[in-house]
Length: 437
Image (cartoon, rainbow, N blue to C red; front, top):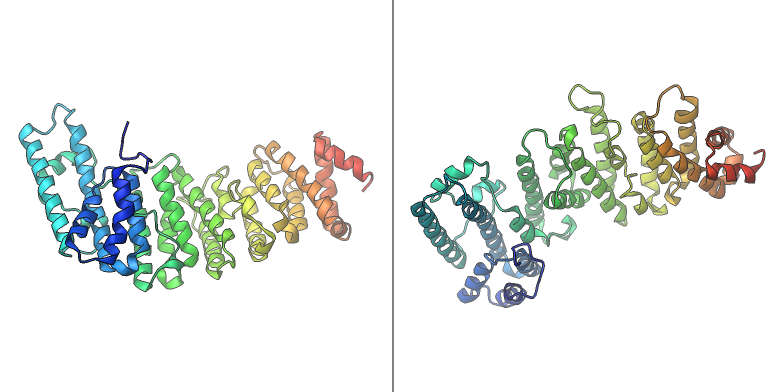
């Protein structure tokens, strides 16, 4: 069954979205082309909207202010589409709109569409603004809006906004300072919109649209200058309640994936990492000493050692590894109390990228597992296989350094004996190989 979310791109509206932008860019003043472009904003499929804005964005240098007018039109249409969707379903309720009110609404929508297309053709649309609510033409729809408010449904169709902005690249690809500023404003507004939809204490994993915004912000931050106030984008995410901890986890994991893939890695990425870690540890949530619960995976994402990020670490990340070494002393206050975190740390220490600090990591693990055994570790069994694998890697890659480091060697032996006592198969094999090491 056909729907706005259909991904099929062989429809008539997708063909028009592929073709018309090239013609329009060659003749931006052509009123017939401007009419057709404006009408495509009302295309029935989100994929057509995505194609339209992608192709226009590729030609935005030639289109100039017209591209901003096009963006303004999609915001206004997203508001109107939300009304239309609501009215379609509202007729199912006993207290729905009357037939007269429904006809009046339909007539007003038609008049609104004719007016906005005409204004686009004549370049009379206002520019986009940061507060998306201010781009809603609500004046002739008070009857419907009064009814919508009773159901808490009074904003816009976010799927259209996402489709029209999926082309957005990283900030370093902006054509000029104003475009760069516009992109930052978009992400800030998108985040504010999503957060405004969270009523009370939000539980649950962010949905696809929400993840897209979190990923977009994460991709923008490494390219932002201090005067662009990057904290306005990441503070609100880290400040979410404990129940919404999946949001900062998704964001922090994406932020590290972006940064670790950059070559060279911008200094701003290093600076922002340090600021985020400091912010988390110095600004606890409510009256608690910790921002998140001890068992939450967001603690791993905070320093980039979560399961979705570990594979991105490479030997060229020496400076970030050194930075992690400084973070880990503090992080261990939390990580050392939960076996799943110790598993993540052990797995990360086994990466080639962690070669310079692996022996230090072995000493840390010995301290929290063996020498501070009076402090309980929740689900300690989660860490056993990962620690065993780490000891195996340590022996393979660091044997000469291990023999020359009395502290690390003693820590290695204690951890190995701990695992042997637990009958860990990897540890038993290591002990067989090592004899009396």
